[in-house]
Image (cartoon, rainbow, N blue to C red):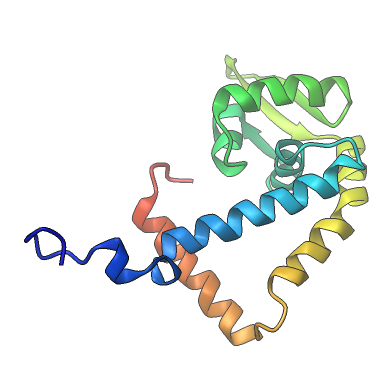
Length: 155
């Protein structure tokens, strides 16, 4: 036990039994692999996340998009500047509040996502190789519960 406080030490738990450590390792490897794959498409991971989110949720504010794309709001704004120049996204002021900009994906953005999707899906299949559907379903349900436990945003 750690210095009399009744809590187990990290050494007692062990890194390979400490889920946050394992999640970080898996996520870091996933991000590195995807980033390497995206280089050949001249796309960043943030670009991919933005396009992926907007392909499922047709219109979001910059703040909402930054939550879903798991990117700082300032990074999302800069990324959207470049993506708008490339014709992948469109930002339009909201008619009832000109201060708010709604972001949506364009046909060019959908085409860019379609080009990278086979590579992303291959990585997804590789990540879950040997994991049956029942385990995958339980894993996703567990992740949703964990997300509820740490959630800062209602999104």
